[in-house]
Length: 346
Image 1 (cartoon, rainbow, N blue to C red):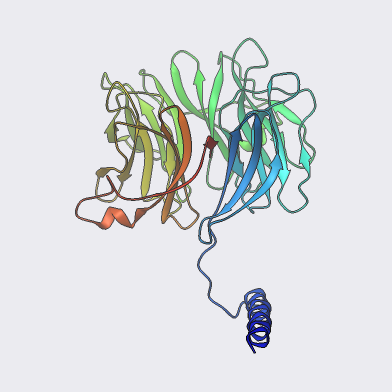
Image 2: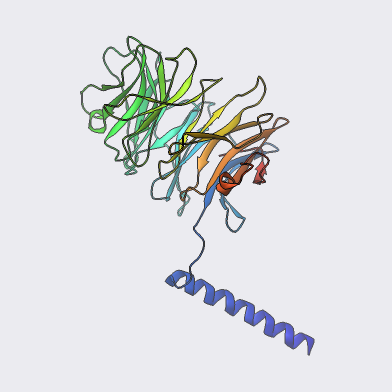
């Protein structure tokens, strides 16, 4: 009798799983929004790129890649993962990994730095900093042909820190002309000979542009008040002060709806913290402990969660925070968040 009951339960479990799969495929069940996080983990001399379903806590290895991997970035359609990694001769190189086929591609004879890579909104190009020549410059990959072009502009000694406009029509960047300033260049000029426009016109040092995903606003870092600070501006408008910084090398990350801006700063001599600026209320929230090292904030597509790298005692982990804590009277400091795996990078 016990064996018979066990078989019945097994059959019912299998049938339930099949029916659930059919219903989900047909769209008959309202499932929670998909939140998939890609990260790299390196342990005991072995590395791999992992895809994590945050809702279901399921992790799948996408690629075993022992050399160091940094700067992972999703394509707009979620089908391809770009990243920077050491190749077999010890230099950083950009790679493209198709999630479905697991096909790995890389441009020929092209090296880069270990800095961020950015997809254009239409998925046709990837921009990144490179140090192939005597000065840093932006390189752009055509994702269909894997051809690489270098951004070379007259009277600008070096350029870097690219950021695409929401419609992909322009590429903002930091350039060293008469001063260090923020420029924008039409995307069509990446293949043709035409010049940029000065996006932020001020004699101070302006850099690290980050275009809002929903409108013409752009965030940047400037020392125009004698101290590094974050500003937001739009075409024809005076830049709006957002927050002061103790350390100018911040990471800026817009929320998908363009209402909030996550950034990093070092409030003390040791450690770094993540803040979120609410642009509607002008409030700035400290969301992580300032006595530890937290970096590289990245928003979920629905804007409800924030992933970031958390380092403790020379070890790293991926943390995922539910931003409903912003609505709590005590804020997000000390708010529990989910750790993924140690020795990993977003």
